[in-house]
Amino acid sequence: MQYAGNINLQTMEKFLFVYNWLSALTDGRFFRTTFSGILRITAIVFTIYLLGDAIENGQRMVDLPAGASLLLPILSQLLLLLAGYMVIHLLLLRAAEIRSLYDPRYALSEVVTVLARLSGEVLFVATLAATLLTLLQIEEVEVSPWLNHLQQMIAPLLKQTTEVWILVSGLTLSFLLLIAGYLSSEVLEMVMKLSRNSEQK
Image 1 (cartoon, rainbow, N blue to C red):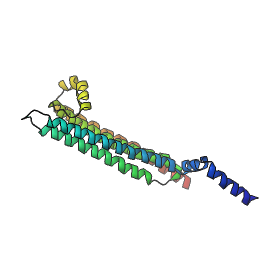
Image 2: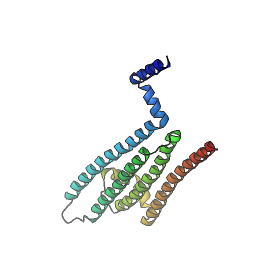
Image 3: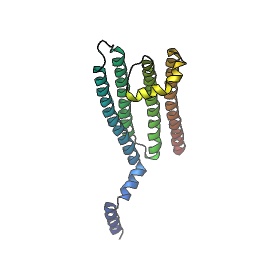
Image 4: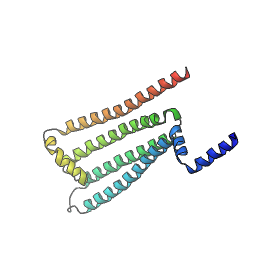
């Protein structure tokens, strides 16, 4: 009878996917696969956008009047590409890290610690790039259409500040965001270690 019950249970599991889904939730496979996939898809989408934006900016440089300096537009485009590459690489690295997590007891907590570090890293790169691009905007360089809209919104503030102040503020803010991301990640890891140690006792 017990053998027959096991067979019936195995048969039910083949037709009712909820069993497999609950198993994936319990051991953390669902969360690891989901968040890792989201980061990879985000990296692909961002890569496509970055390439499209680079092509559009390249065409805009070609249409510049004869004799116009291309130094600052090229520098701004290289800065965008470098920042974009760093963000894409960070997304792929953290996606691989999430996929390699193994502790089923703290599956979601481990994922959140990685996402916290990733948030600090991405915000650090984005803030630093935005600061440098803002300085180029002051030189009236058309970097990107969406950045031109940003320039219009912060133009009154820029008129009342110096380039040195903008640079120092941007560097400070980017560093603080990086610290916040890593600190929150370390706090979560500390809580998990304390929990593991208490369980072993």
